[in-house]
Amino acid sequence: MVERPPLRHNESNSLTSSRCSSRDKNNNSSSSRVAVVAVVVVVVVVVVVVVVVVVVVVVVVVVVVVVVEIIAILVLGEGRSELSPEQDRVSGVHNG
Image 1 (cartoon, rainbow, N blue to C red):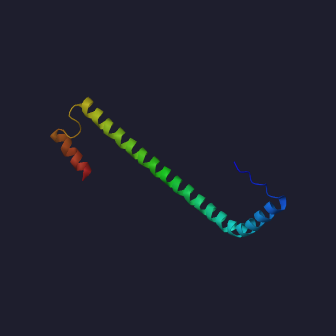
Image 2: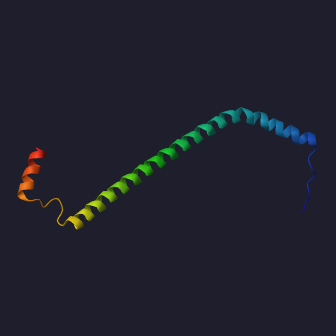
Image 3: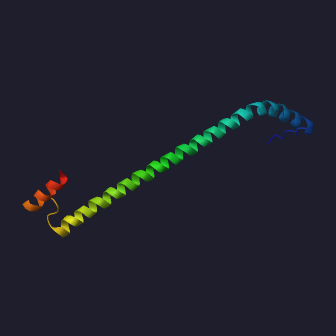
């Protein structure tokens, strides 16, 4: 292994200070860009989570309604569609 001599203290400071001065100008604009990107990412993630939750709730409600209808058909027999002619006539009057 070849060992390099360590840099003198003044050399390292002058190198980093010249690099930092040019970086500081760009760092302000890049840090604001990073902040804007972070905010946009957070907003997008929140919107996606809300949409997923709404879709899951709608699917659960639909499944529960379908299961309740199936149970009602099994328990009550033929279901609501098989009304007697008298009940059909009364429900027709109420529906318009």
